[in-house]
Amino acid sequence: MNHCLTCLFIALSLLGAHATGAEPALPIRVILVGDSTMATRSGYGDALCALFTSETTCINLARGGRSSGSFRAEGRWDEVQALLKDSAAYRASYVLVQFGHNDQPGKAGRSTDLVTQFPSNMARYASEVQQLGGVPVLVTPLTRRSFRGPYLKDDLAPWADATRTVARALKVSLLDLHALSAASVQQMGQQEADTLAMAPPPQAAVAATPTVNGALGEPQGTPKTTFDRTHLGPKGASLFAAMVARELARGNPALAPSLK
Image (cartoon, rainbow, N blue to C red; front, top):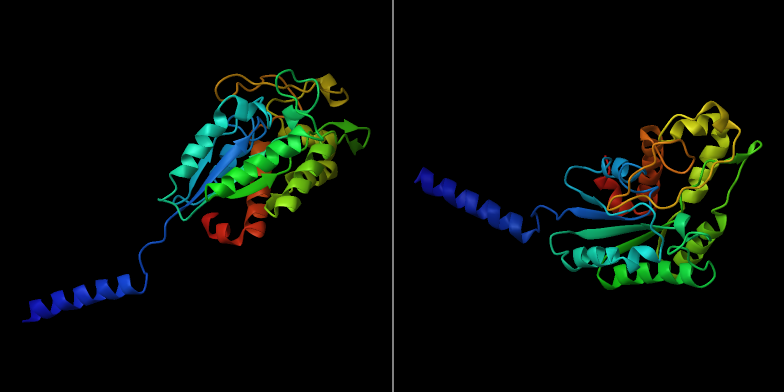
């Protein structure tokens, strides 16, 4: 009799849990789309993924040398769309899209027109994420860390402005990494900012104007082994990943519990 009562109690408890919707919540997924400043080994993307809880899926699909045009032209966006079409196992899929560095003029096969092509490309990414049930987050490009005297040389401001305009027009989430990173780098100055690079600066590099490296290799992008003020070493990746995580939680409260 006692055994039967115990079985009945367990059955009723399970039934009650089901009736009140107490099943474990589905996890959240985050997909990163961008260039070398977000990519594995040269950007902050992997460090950002490490800041999510173990229940959260974070996939870094950013690739070095890609622009808002070439990422799609190479078929890399197809992979993102395929993932979004198979979203039944996730409560929500956030797609962070950051371009700008390789959209600038002078990058053969990658440059896009700032007035027409770049805004259109960013808007299309956001719209397609929404159409597939995902949550787009447009990210303004991470600042470069070159100074002109005591002031940061902000050559990515127009691309950041264009990204903000698209986000406002489509009423999608914006993560203004450019403004946050530029303010942080300006505050630290050239010497400290140089410690965020992939390699220590040569003695003469502190006062020199660096060349801007574009494409990194296939498929993930082979990072430069020499000093530059665009790509990130471990210290820079950690700094900007934490910055992105804080802003993600602020702008997307439903995602905050998924961050450590």
